[in-house]
Image 1 (cartoon, rainbow, N blue to C red):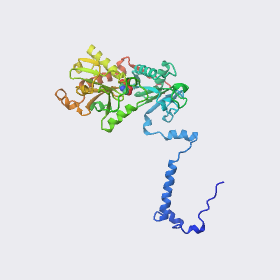
Image 2: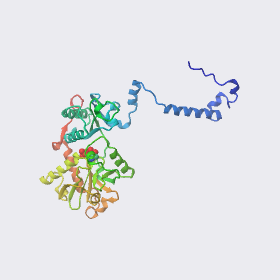
Image 3: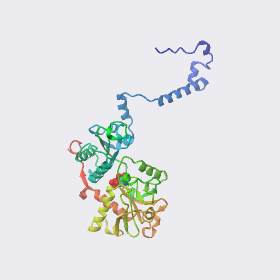
Image 4: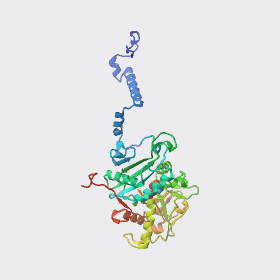
Length: 398
Ligand SMILES: Cc1ncc(COP(=O)(O)O)c(C=O)c1O
């Protein structure tokens, strides 16, 4: 039984400097001592970790939502065997090797005007990455594709992104996936704040000192994006918009989530090989569009924009050659085609002044962006779109 607190013994009581009312006043020594003891106790209670009941833990998930969760539209989890739209429930178990070992691959596709753009190209890369990461699919490929589309539909938005992960799955905290019960699959549909005019001012980029990934890992879109995050942080910390991976010999690899290309003064459009960089679905499509455009000589992007392009090559590109180019650009699903206006200490806006006086982003770069934007428009019927099956269940169509 707990001992009752009896207070001070009568002989000690006279040593306390003040009466009970003094303990409430901040003008007395006793009051200040009491206040400081209370703050100490408050701090200790904040540091104390609670053991939560299931009910409290569930309500903490909702209480922990932050403002950006508004952009999280829908989430599929193979663990839940279904889709949820409450961001509080968009969670992944800690014993999934995706979480504690990073044993997972992922990919992202854009939702544009109610269609997924280049879904099949992204899925193809996803399955190739899965194979390289030794991951099995929990369902047939057609079902994976269907789940991605259903999750996009449940998000009920005509614009945004779907990102999907394949993990080694749950089963324990070991390293080998031999303990995993079944591979896991997750999909999230989300929106992101974007400035549609950002490309008009272009990006300032910084050569990163973070080592470029070696070919096996650079060409596999795994969950290990630590190096990529460090490139982005390093650039941001120095006031740049984006960073660039360059290999040990000084050859350009890529940006942290986008490819890089240049147009030389001799009219060569150069993309580095997909060896120290991911094979970007967007850059591949842009190159196809440029080739088509040059062949057919039609479309709203005037041929003269591409007159400067005499040749398209995929070959090693040294950082010195890249910085001496006429135009530099970055390309990715979310980036689209982004002009680079500054690279380290090189200012492209002033460097090539004789044929770019007063002009910001390069004309070939902007024309490529135009071609891509046209191609992303579902009305282009380019064969790159998959309709999101919003249907009656979502309440969007009746
Ligand atoms: C490292 C890296 N490089 C390049 C890209 C560009 O690929 P995509 O055009 O398929 O988005 C991405 C984006 O996924 C990426 O993460």
